[in-house]
Length: 321
Image (cartoon, rainbow, N blue to C red; front, top):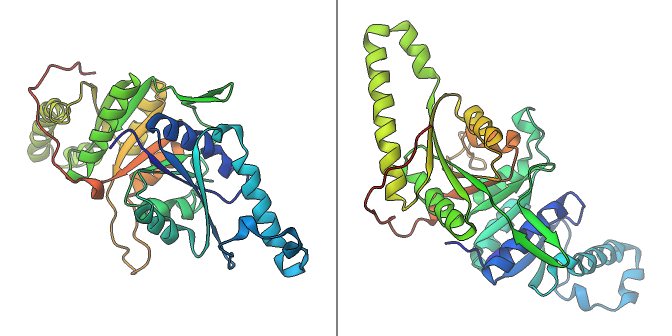
C-alpha cells in the first residue's frame, strides 16, 4: 500500500487548507505519483474553467468563477508542486460524498485534510467536514491540525518526508490490521522508529474496585493476555516495534505517549459505524479525540482497504515498556 502514489488534495484555496499541500507534495514525490487538486463548489463550474476567455468573468454573475480560476492558478504555481504531475478537478456538490467518489474514480491512495478542530474543545468544533471525510473515504486520510509537529521538510524546491518516530495505536481487532501494515511499511521505508501501543481501558479498574473478588483476577489475566498478544501482533504484522501497554482512557494515553516520545505521526485504524439517526456514518469518540488533541498529524486507515491477510512471520523478541 505504501508508498502512496495517487494523492487527493482537497482545498478551498484558503491559507488554512494550504497547510496540507506540503504533505501531499512530499508523498507524491516519494511515490513517484500525482496530485489531484480537488475543490468542491456550491455553484456550477464549467468544465473548461481554466481555458475560458477573460471577458467571461467581466459579468457580475461570473466574477466568482474568475476568483476561483485565479485561486487554481496560484496554487498550481506553488514551488511545492514543481516537477509534479498535478490535475485540477473542480466540481459542484457536497465535500464529503464528492471526495469519497473521487477516491474511487481516481484510484486515490491518500487524502490530505486540514481540520479546524481545536484542542480540548467539544466534538462539534473539531470539524464536521473532516469527520465526514474520515467516515466516507475508503482509503487512508491524513489529518493535519496546525500548528503541530511537522515531518515534511521543504528546502530549495525539494520536499522530503522525515519521519523519526511513528506511533501505531492498536486494539487487536481486524480494523487495526491495515493500519499496522501501513505503519510498518512507512517505518521501513523512512527508517523511522516504530512504537505500537495498546491501552487497557480504565473502566476495568473501576469495575474491579466494585467487584474485587471476581473482576480483579480477570483484570490480571487480561493484562497478561495483552502482553502476550502485543508480542504476537507485532510479529504477525511483520513489524519490529517497541511495544507499550498502558491503562487509562485510550485517547489520553495515545496523545500522552506521542508527546513523551516526540512522535511525528500517529497511525490508527478506523471502523465506521452507521448513524443511529440514519445520517452520516460516525466514527468512534476516541478517534475524534485523538485527532483533536494529537501533537502531530494523524493517519487514519480504514479497515475496508484490507484485500489480503497479513502474512505471519517467525516471532522475534521486542522490548516492552
